[in-house]
Length: 75
Length: 472
Image (cartoon, rainbow over all chains, first blue to last red; front, side):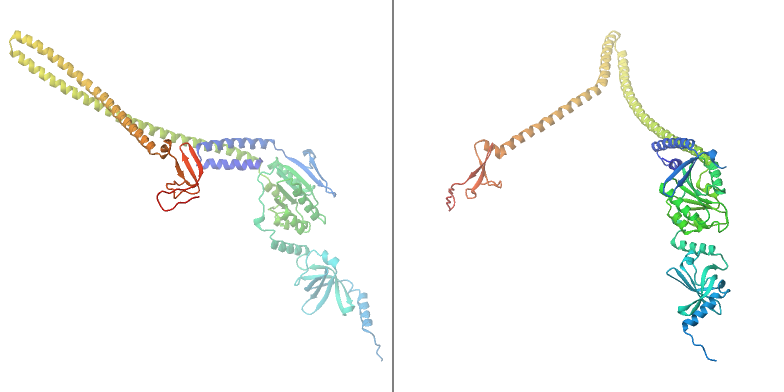
C-alpha cells in the first residue's frame, strides 16, 4: 500500500465512523483498521527520506541513475 | 535614326542585368500586406501590396521553412530580399530572404498561431487534465541543473516534503536544443515510469528566452505524458504554451514545487486529527450502544416485575378464598356445638354429664373427619380424574389399533395375488391387461403365478360359448 492509498482509506474510515450509522461490529472493525492505517502512515512518514537522483540518457539510449548526496548539492 | 531590333530574350536579359546590378534593388526591405500566399513544393509564393501597387514575391523552401510563423493573407509584414527579373514570365519579383511581421514580433505571432492550433486540437481542455497525487513518493524534475529554478524547487521540497525521491533530468531550457531535450526528458520519465508527478520548470527570462516552452513539440510531449505534469515557467506574468497544456500551471518554479508536494507539518496534524476523531467516533458509538442496552434491560426488568406481581396477586386471592371457606365451616360447627351445649344444660346433671361427654366425643370425631375430608377431597378428585383420563386414552388407542388390524386382514383377502396363492393363475396380454375370455387371448401372453410370471403361446383355442372355433 502506498502512503497516499493509506491516507485516503484512513480519511474514508474517519468519515464513515463520524457519520455514525454503522453497527457496533463494523465500527470496531473500522476502528481497528483505522489504528492500523494510522500506525502504517506514521511509520512510513518516519521512514521516508528525501533523495535526489540524477537521470541521464546518452545518445545510445543508455540510462544512468546517480544519487546526489545532499552535501554535493550546490546550495 | 534607325531602330535596333532586338529579340524578347535580348530585352529581358538586358533588363535582368540592369536590375541585378542595381545596388538598391539588391538589398531591400519592403513593407506591405501579404495576399495570395501559397505554398508549392515548400516554396512560398505571395503578393505584397499596398493601396496603389502590387509586388509579386517568392521565398524558397529552405528559408520559408525556417520562418518561425506561418505567413498568411492579410498580415502586415516587412519583406527583406532583392528584386530580380523572372525572365520566363517577364516579371520582376521580390526574392524574399526573411519576413518580419509588423506590430507584434514573429515569435509572438508564432505563439498565437500555435496556441490557436492546439486549442482546436483540444490540448487545453480541462476535461483531459490529470489530477496530481496528494502524497507523491517520487517526483520527476525537468529543468536546468544549474540556475535558480532547481534551487528554488529543491529548497521548497526540502522544507515542505523531505520525504520524496526526486528524479532530476537536467535539460537546457533555452536555445535551439532546448525543445528537443525537454521532449526527450519527458518521454524518458514516462518510459521508465519513474515518478508519480513531473515538475517542468524554468526561471524567469524574456519572451524569447522562454520560447522553447512555446514549441509545439514540447506541447505534444506534455499532452502525451501519462504522468501528470505541473509547470512553473518564468514569472507570474508569463504564460507559455507548455503552461496551458500542463495538468496544472504554477506561476513560478517554487509554486510548482508547492503544488506538487504536501506539507509534512500539515500531514502530521492531519494524522493527529484523524486519530482523535476516530477515537471520539468510536466512543460515541459505544455510548449509543450502551444506552440502547440499558434501555432494553430496563424494559426486560419491568416486564418481569409485571408478571411476578400478577402471579402473586392470583396466589394471594386463592389463599384468601381458601381461608374464607375454612372460616365459614368453622363458624357453622362452632354454632352447632354451642346449641348442643345449651340443650345439655337443660338435662339432669348426671345424665347430662354422660350425654354431654358422649355427644362431645361424637362431635369431636365428626369435626375431625370433616376437616380431614375437606383436605383430602381435592387431592382425591385430582388423582381420580387422572386415572379416568389415562383409561379413556388407552381405550381409544386400543380401539383404533384393533380396527386397523381388521382392515388390514380384509385388504389381504381382497388382494388378487392372494387368490394366486391358492393355485389359481392370471392371464395378461403383453401390455399388462387382464385377459378374461378365450376370445381375447392373443398369440403371445403372460401367465402370472403367485411367485412370478411366464411368457406363453396360444396353440389352440376352444371356445365353448360363441360361434367360432379357431385352430392355430
